[in-house]
Image 1: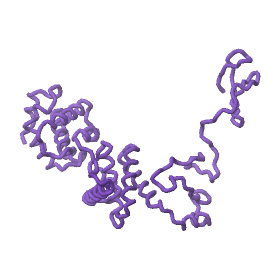
Image 2 (image 1 turned 90 degrees about the vertical axis):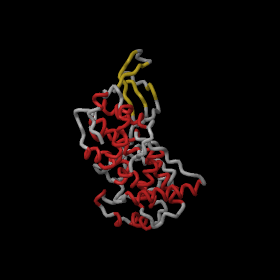
Image 3 (image 1 turned 180 degrees about the vertical axis):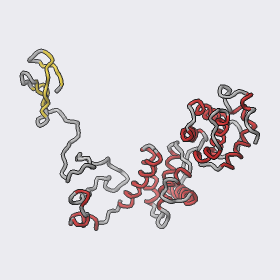
Length: 312
């Protein structure tokens, strides 16, 4: 019970909420203070066999405009809870025989959702990947191609377009066996198909080394001060003509920053955290080394400290 002001009692009194009628009643004089209130709590009523792992709220998920029925179709539940045989139900058997035009899309969207969850991606990226796959699927030209590679490529493109890029290796780690080469081919295919659909090139977004820096530093367990120095160094490195991929530059700068601290990171650990080969990191370090004095922030390392860096 809670307190409310009663106009008859002329003071704050305890009130009782009548859920069946939606009335708020004074517990002392019985005056109805508020009637036909809307109960916004969950409706704990279910018409299915209750089980411990199911939320019995009788509401469905949100509508999905990418599906023909908006994602609001009905699925016949298994008899006797989760332990029953679905095909033993005649209704379930008939539904299973029926052709659902969105069955392939639903399975694809579930796969994209699983990959997104494993990478810790936000819902907007997942929705963008779903939209990209739906546009490619509507062209009816992806038949016979590697489905896992297509879904992974859609997720990669969505990350790029939402300015939250992931490396191909990161996407490959959750791609159900699809290789980097297959994902790369699928990406080129999708970009080509979307370009034919719209009549113009597809905007993929520009990748910067700073896009990966915070995540890579976090994977290595670097301090906030080292992470801040690495991010500033990446921004300054863009002023120089260093012809290396953004991921390689990020890995090399992390290597430089960690060598200037007591908690030095091995090249192998940086390679594992960033997905960049050790040889590539060495070559990128070689290109960055002449500009170290201008790239590394002065508040993080003095000129004497920079001299302690090994010559490439």
